[in-house]
Length: 175
Length: 137
Image (cartoon, each protein chain N blue to C red):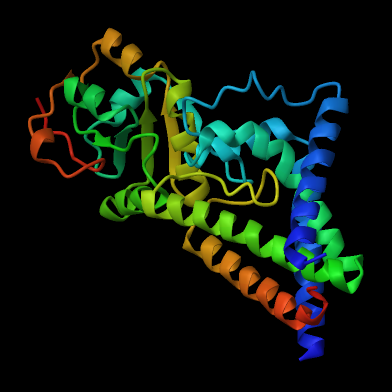
C-alpha cells in the first residue's frame, strides 16, 4: 500500500474517531445547529479584564490628552454618527491595525471602547487589553445607544472627514 | 541525519498529539475559533470535530507507528500543516484579529510568527517524510 493511501487512512480514521467521540458525548457539538459568531471574539490570556465605564464617567474624560475613545461599530454606523473625537476601530480590525492605532495615540493611558451595546465592544476591548496590559481599557456602558440617549457633553454627530479617510483609523471631526 | 529525522519525528508527533488533546474536549469553542478565521467558516463545526482526533491519530503514527506508518503520518502532517498555514496566512493578510486556537483556548493571537512556526513544523514534517521515504511503498 503506498504512503499516500496510508496517509488518507490516517486522516479518515481520525475523522471517524472524532465524529464518533462527538456523537458519544452527552453535550457534544451539534454540527447542523452550529451558528458562527456574529461578532469577532478574543480569548482571555491572563490580561486584566476591561472595566465597564459609565457614560457619565467617560464624558468626564473627554478632551483629556491621554484618553482615546474608539468606535468598534461598522463603518456605516460610524459615518452616521459617533462620539465626537472617536477613532474608528471596528471589531474585525486586525491586531496590526490595533497596534497602529495605539502607536498613533502612543500618549494614551486610557482607551474607552464602545459598540452599539456594552457587549458589542468587549472583544475589541479584551484584545486591546491583552496586547497592551499597561493601558487602561474600558468598555462604555450601554454603548453608543446609551451615550446618545444620555445627551452628554461630548455630542455625537456625523464625521465630515470619513469620506476621505483611509479606513478604520479615521479620526472623527468635532461637530 | 538519522538523529535529526528522529528528533523531527518526535517533535512533530508530540506537538500533534498535544494540540489534538487540548482541543478535543471542547469542540464548540474550537468551532467558534475556526469560524473566526473567516475561511470556509461553514466547515467550522465539521473541522472542529474532525481535526483534533485526526491530529492525535497522525501524531501517534509519527510517535509509535511502524516505519511505513511513520512515513504516512509525515505525509498526513504535511497536508494538515499546509492547510493550517494557508488559513493563518489568510488571517494575517486580511488583518483579522483572532485567537490561534492551535493549542486550545489560550494559544494567543494569530501573527506572522504563527505562520513562521507552522512553516518550521512543515519543514520538520518534510524532513521526516524524506528520511523515511524508503518505507513509502
